[in-house]
Length: 511
Figure 1 (cartoon, rainbow, N blue to C red):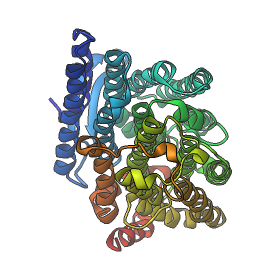
Figure 2: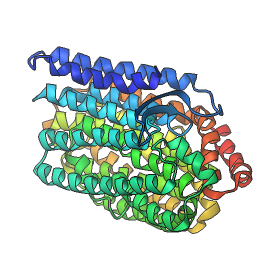
Figure 3: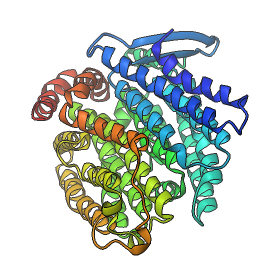
């Protein structure tokens, strides 16, 4: 049995086990959830370490036929595109389980939903079958709505639950229509993604079919990822969500749509992808500039971070739109880095909210005096969000800028300005107002995190630093398979490898 089955399976088995545990056994419930996610994280680290860059085909592969008449099977495997995402998702899930101490009501139900969400998204990233790829994502998405509606905070909790349910349901439906159309038009008579791609190499989809399917996938997945202008659900949803839910959704689940575009849309719909590339690059400006400006005006720390998370999606879309090796590699790098960063920031704001009962920036101030560890961690997260060298986010954004410059020099300049100026302004201003200055008397009783509660924050910071100082751990795994995707998307293997690889190596070697 593949190690991937165990990585996604342990949380799902733990969720089933919790059903029979009495709800008053709070310590046992929490211990089972933490242990299951820890096992998944350890297995994911082992899988990542054993992954061989550039090996032919998928690794740790397992396939079990299910509905043979339709070509549906349980098929999992990893290559350079998803090996880092599975590692990131497993680590974030473990951190989210550790941060769930803030949940004090209906804990049994919360942990069951958290484990189902974890198993679903890890399984979706590992899946190589279109049916299970979509089904497991939906399995992970449904708990999000419930957790925000039941355990969310603030007066706008119900409105945010309605909005996020509406947006994400519409996005998932549009993406489903695109995937069904792809299955019908491909002519491969299978839901198996590698087989569909192999079939498309000799029997490419008609241009008319590509032009119909690609926008469905782009906007369906785009809504799930908060592509501008379909982004308004995300900041509000994350602002009221319990911290573990925001960590998993903003950090991990939201990368599903981006991964789907790279894994499915680019190689199977190359001509449509080239036609839509410039339009997608223009939409990225909306994420980076408009949402960045919105973040500058926020008075709530969680809303500021939520808008910042949406703005960062623009850099990933820009890397995808570049359609070259360095840009696509950079997009995958940012996906991994942003997963750690989003989880870290929402975990920290959750701690601050639990201590103070508010995230209004004007009501905070001087928190570093009473919360030195939490304050330092939040400062590091803010600097990572600004693209400070040493953090994984810098490597990803720099790589995307190299790739995007070849295709969209003007848009790249605008994106660079948005990252350095707009992002720098709202992040540094928030840090100044929250962590520094005079400490209000009402916060004199605050207490910093103990050793156990420091663990999830430290784990996420270390992950950002490891891949920031050693980006080759990711780039050498991503490059060979990203090159195959780019080759199919552009129809030019030589151009993809010769013009882009030096820039990727330049970024990696100079870190």
